[in-house]
Image (tube, rainbow over all chains, first blue to last red; front, side):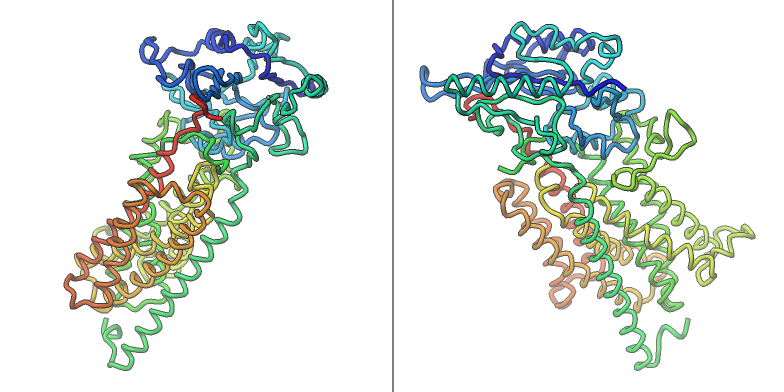
Length: 269
Length: 306
């Protein structure tokens, strides 16, 4: 059994070149949008805007500026987190979403029927419909490349090694060393997101080095599984059903008593 | 900010909203019909037959809407059978959309059998086996009991399905299943009042339905208040058109107005207008719940997101 593989993305050395986005679209043959005519976001130098069914990699530009010269750019190449406990896999009603031998999460496009439950279940807003396929799609961590011993296209294309691919245990060690190095250099806000196997969702097989709060990067602080609500919501629904059933029965009994008292309309039929 | 604001919308819209609405009516109507079959009087039989018809056609429409909403409608059966290992069943007890697909199928089967019994009773079909499904037979009662449970399940599971996501509003409250179930009961009773008369429903049955409908509306109102209170940490979502529609369309027009008509009949209006308003309120409830969440786009970090 191969060991768990994944990505470690060091956002501090991402230069926003979007080579990963291009390599991903190219390798996975993802279609263009809007007939290939690029639409501008209008409020950022980033025009991909978000992950989608046709953009499985997205380099986020976080532009923290107060005035024209006072500020900084944060850049982060975002992708499916390949959660150890994956909400999408949990809810998928067709069995289209599977966990591979590399501990990654893959949507089988020939099984998916496009119900979109996984889109609502993903705590990171990663999954979307591919309009050409009519199915939900996302990063496969280049499952086809991994099966023949190649690294994913995005990691291969990254010119600064901001995206690093490898066994998760090795990546965690490497990431912690990098955090220590940054802290020693004075970047006290350096932290890892999703590296803890005892943390939210059992850890993420695509984890990040950040230098600000997760929310600044558009990441939830405490991502959760959708099933957390199942028991409570189901119990309350069952309780309301019991109350309504009881009310109906009491009403029927009252009617019967009233009819007996009045001579009984119902007994005539 | 709630963690649910970092998620993407599934864009469940104009097939799913009517599906939730029709499924609620069908489930509620069958549940009421089943209760009347077990505990009602012979005078209730027209209402029972109406309930089974509404449930059957509602289940068929629900299934069709659910299928048309899929990105690949011809693969609808992948929810029931393992496509790569047919005929092994596809069932996840922890996924509402998975067990819901089975519940709709089984509910439709019960409603279909019950409707055959109702048609046999009315003389519309004369197949010899159908008389065993007529009201009052043991088989009909057993099917009614099973279908009644599936009916309430179909009415309520749609709300549970929404809660078992990571989307704003839906996943931020545990009350949606209870709310949709109560709404299914009130709209189911309203539909029975509306269509029951055409099949000869008695005054006694209609009066009981109106009384039960009022009780269901009160339960729905209480749950709606609990639902809104549970969303206090993200209350800003209601400062929108959807908040306005919830207040005016669902609470005022869909719940309080029919309650006023029920308790003060002199205000005007008869059962028909009462039922129509309840149905409108039930539909708007689904519109508000679905579209209020859909309108919250994935958190956009650009342009000074920090």
